[in-house]
Image 1 (cartoon, rainbow over the protein chains, first blue to last red):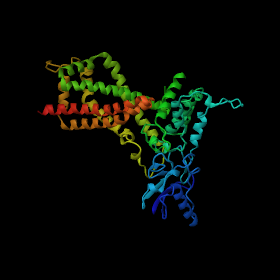
Image 2 (image 1 turned 45 degrees about the vertical axis):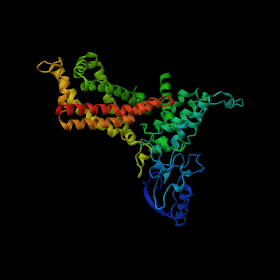
Image 3 (image 1 turned 30 degrees about the vertical axis):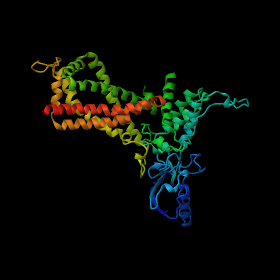
Image 4 (image 1 turned 90 degrees about the horizontal axis):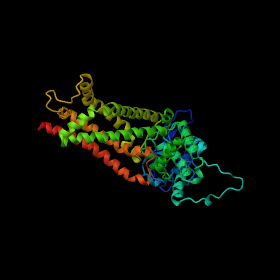
Length: 248
Length: 227
């Protein structure tokens, strides 16, 4: 495959970036998108140019490291996959592909296509946990009876890998799908009940502090989420917050 | 309350509550207006009641005005804040791939509805206030005293074609706004689970049928007048 890549290049966080065009040839349709970028980077290094910086780690869709806004969509045109699982057969020979970083004020660009997603970590630190006594007499989680339905829904919410595609896709740069999933995975389980009130209040407060936008329920986040996290999680978070505020 | 409105979810919920209130108002407005097609006398009676009842005039009407102003102001505030949350926009953004045009452009459909509402107020509400509270005529009767004036005023308003077209376009924008807004309001207050799926169909029906009903009323009076 012969392609024209239009890639966002930005030296560092303070530098003003721009789209730079790179023609590339000899790409196999069986390559993953990141392998195609590897080929480009090898070419750039050989030519003495700075390679394109992009995030990646597991390359099997579970770590949440890779990002990229490809032809106007987070993780590209395929559904329920991360960028590392996207394959070049989704594109046609001769295509022009725009590759940009995930954009939001709360996700500042560090370099080229790498953005700082530590805002998500700070939201998690604010309440995305349960306190468990680890003295050695810790109760086995499986000893607590939990309905299959609740366990399944909690597991679905917990599959969120925190990649930030929801923020990148949302026209408002809202993080509510991520926060909704993290609130839900505990709200659905008995272990999460003790800290439920503080959790939702603190996580929402931190989300607002980070400068994410307000959700207007367009549903773009759900469609672009590589793990298919449902909008029901946002509704559940809203209910949890109403409940928490009524409790005081 | 101010703390609640500063929270992103608090604002969502406040928008949704004002939207619920306005959707109920639109339904009752339609129920009264459709009477003008089937039973002008009943339309006159109900209009006179609504226009002179102290509870409607001095309690419900101010609440309605507050609801309308709040919904518009909060809508503009949210749009401004949301746009500001992404300083650098994408070179290529394929919004159609993941969301509806209606959901992404509520500010434009809402903006046109605001323009329409201003014209609607100038057409009906301000003259009504003038007759009742400036000239002091609360009889609701025509100048010759033969009948109530409401039906005749309504018919008179829908004589010019430009106004009929403007109202029809206004209702189309109302439909586009409701096609996203109805279900969005339920989602905002936490109403999205397996029990509320049937609401989605009802929301779409409401968003199409009520504005369509208003268009039918406007066209009915236009064609009724011209024949």
